[in-house]
Length: 502
Image 1 (cartoon, rainbow, N blue to C red):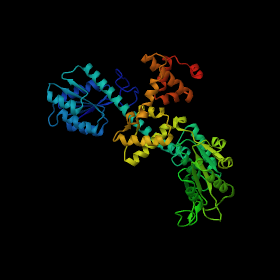
Image 2 (spheres, rainbow, N blue to C red; image 1 turned 90 degrees about the vertical axis):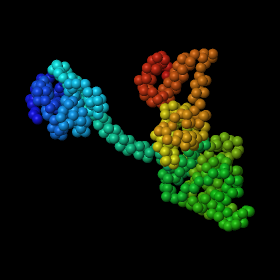
Image 3 (cartoon, helix red, strand yellow; image 1 turned 30 degrees about the horizontal axis):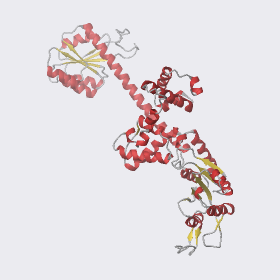
Image 4 (tube, one colour; image 1 turned 180 degrees about the vertical axis):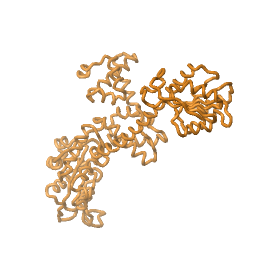
């Protein structure tokens, strides 16, 4: 086995790397005929570092110690055939380009070489030197491209890992800022709620939480408690609309034995049990006038009197109340005491309905999906674009609670699917967007192309007005920003149209 070839400052036809000072590509020639080895060496040594070997075993030794870019092997050799050698060469240097010399057509060997040896090209005997150099040049261009792709893939993998770690850190930061006991949201409306929770939570101020059913008023109440000075004390909740007046009074303030039928023993009420902590009175607007008077007395005097007792007890309890009713209207119509209303509404936190903070839907949906995955031992990654569009378009009259139930239902039906498609959603959610789209054509114009353009124009205008930027609008619409710009140009939409809302 011999080696030859010295560094040259010239390059031919771009076969070498652009940097002439860099090491030249190494080529390994394996052939049992000395004349062929010498001929190939003379043809290539001006431009490449050429290594030669008389047998497959010698060739494997060269591969173990040299960084070979191109292998040229004879098809028929004693001991180890060219195909066998190339198969083993893949194990030592999988990135090297492989070419085979052949003097006859052995179909079986050719098929095996293509399948197992992964041959880049065959070189027939005899060969033309110029054509051989051209084939080698192209083979090494393939090698260089593969190497660059490998380097880029490695760099991308490293960047992705670094990004993943950064995302984990940022996600923890976001959760600390935007999450209180599973209360999630990144919209401006929810950020204002979080700011109020942080400020009011540090105090003992009485808070009234308002909002529609299912918006998470109970979570806000818990967040206020667990971010405040009473966090280590008890938090107890009572739905004021779930019990009749006598039982509710007993539940809150306790009772003495014999106070009413069935009162066989003394019982402490929630106010006494929760002394030092927080009581959450949910649906306080459902209280009867009599209970409103009793609650007002507790707020004024910080004292309770158990049902059937003549004695009062002082209690140190923070009260957080919640209602889905408009208490101002209730006061105006005489159904709720005005003095109690102002006692409860020292600070009011209004929770916006989900339809007014649609930007939070993807975050909430993924949160509920992760929770359902854990409960059901599933591994669903997310939602298809069509499914998310349906979720974003729905009005969610039941708010966050309805969304949570819908996601749990979809996970139960999805089985082993990797994502939740639109057809896994409930009929009334899946069909809403189609119904809205069907209602868009005006008058008697039922041309489908014009109707589709009307829908696109309307969706783009609404997205631009509500998000305030093309990038955010494109993200909301689920299309690249460049596609949005092209679509606006085709539909002849201008910035003036966005500002005017036309």
